[in-house]
Image (cartoon, rainbow, N blue to C red; front, top):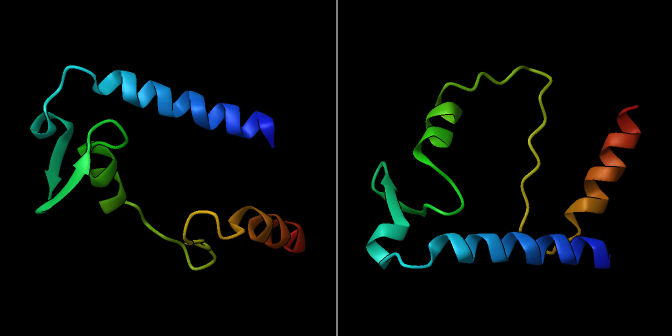
Length: 81
C-alpha cells in the first residue's frame, strides 16, 4: 500500500512540476467543446479512442475513484482464467 501511495505521490509531483509557469488557459485544452487538463491527457488520446474498434468479447470496467475497483478487477480477471 505504501509503495502505491509513493508512486501516486510521485506522479502528482510530476504533473505539478510540469504545470509550473503556465497560466490556467495554458493548462487546459478543449476537445469537442469540453476542457481537459494538458498535464494528464492529450487530444491524440481522444482521437485514438475515436478509432478504437471494440470486439464482441471486450469488457470495459468503469468506476468512481476509491470504490474498490482494484479488487473487482482482480476478481473478474481470475474468474475468467
